Image (cartoon, rainbow over all chains, first blue to last red; front, top):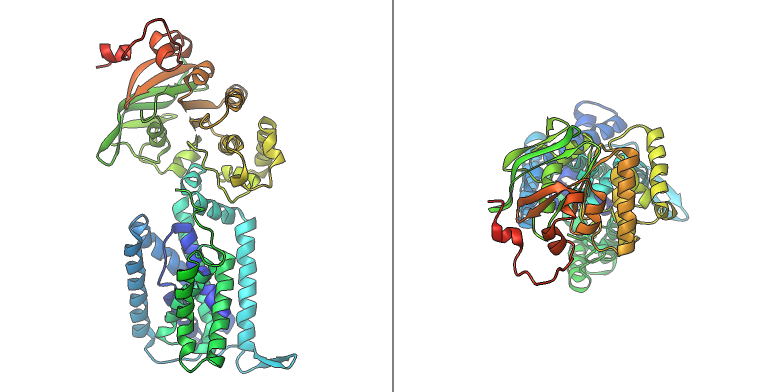
Amino acid sequence: MGCIYGLVALGFVLIYKATELVNFAQGDLLMLGAFVCYMFVIWYGVGYWAAFALAIAIVALFGAALDASVLRRVIGQPQFAVVMLTIGLGAIFRAFASMTWGSEIYTLPTPFSAKATRVGGVTISHEYVSIIVGTVILCAVLYAFFTYTRVGVAMQAASQNQLAAYYMGIPVKRMFSLIWAISAGVAAIAGVLLAPVSLIDINLGFIGLKAFAAAVLGGFGSIPGSLVGGITIGLIELFAGAYLPHGFKDVAAYVVLLAVLAIRPQGMFGTVGRKKV
Amino acid sequence: MPRALLEVSNVETYYGPIMAIRGISFTVPKGQIVTILGANGAGKTTILKTVSGVMDPQKGSVLFDGKAIHGMDPDRVMRLGLSHVPEGREVFPFLSVRENLRMGAYTRSDPGGIAQDLEMVYEYFPVLQARADQRAGSLSGGEQQMLAISRALMARPAMMLLDEPSLGLSPKLVKEIFDIILRINKERGVTVLLVEQNANMALHIADYGYVLEVGRIVMEDACARLLEKDDIKEFYLGVKEAGVRGTRRWKRKKTWR
């Protein structure tokens, strides 16, 4: 569970770092990813892996289109406008999903379903293994992309100093669309990985709020921080469910969020004032 | 006079309602160094930003190599061969020096040529080679300036726009950097438009100069002749003559109105 929070938080952070927008529709992109995958598997009988890939591609394209058509216009507007806009977009996505796929709850059959491995006396179902392995692979891929490829380094450059990136001939606007695509793709991956564990319905996206807590905990703007924050939130939830009275599990993330904002607003890995304007 | 590589005519640029550039025309001939002098707030940086496409002029035209470039996005202007070295260096602080330089060559796709230019840049500024793996943000001001110039050079530009390369540097470093600018111009044939407050250095390396005051060009001439003018000597070079003049002479005469 923590890994999922981490992945969604990663999506938040990627977009925030590059464009200074906070995308509250991140969780709903996750929901769309899960639904698209479900649609391909159940309606069209596509294999799980192919549907997985299709879901990533479609949601990623959708993210890029979203940036090019809507979000590019609000760069430079007050944060408030952006927050309202993305929350609104999230609501539209949910409405779209309930019109297209209905508001029932679905299960997504996967190759991992109902299998389990015993590791040193602890039984882990393969669905959870898939989440953890998926997260690790994804992080490795993203890390390699941002460190070793020309486009990846250019994206870092564009987020560190937008003006200078323009001077270097880096097409900054296209970079931002690409960031949105990656971020949406990450959300879709998280959605598909999550689907077998938590079932698919249109409110899957509300996990985004907990992931937001994870991103804040990790220090908004820090990629490793978002993952660590996600895992931490996941663990806190787990222990809250086990040791605290019933009901604490679901509020634990927000309690942590409040505590972090009150005590250490920059988060665990955040740095204060490193951005020169 | 050689053909003009950059031709700016009657440009007016605004910051919101404020007119920063009040109708300016100048040309930069191919292969030369042209400097624009002026005090703080004269509009020097705005001119460069207008040329490189960061700001769009309200009126007037900017021709680069005969092509209209006003209103173009800066990344497209840059692809035409016009590199801008911004004021205050603007390196990518969390990338290494080498990555910064590679970003300079972002628009190119000839690995051999890029490697060759990397060597060339290291030859101009050996300190960058020594610091190749450091984060650019950890460099000193002078080193960052060297990096910014080198990064622009990595694009193999036909022309460079240099915005106050002397800003915040020691006199010795300024001398060093200007020598290299001169070398780049002579050895690589890169045309340079140099915007400076340090009039002394700028006039000594440039071929032709313009003097800018509150958004207007008030004087222009070959640098050798500008150096001889009394007003320039007094107000830009700080050479004091006997007797105190209260106001700038050309202001009193209002020769440009």
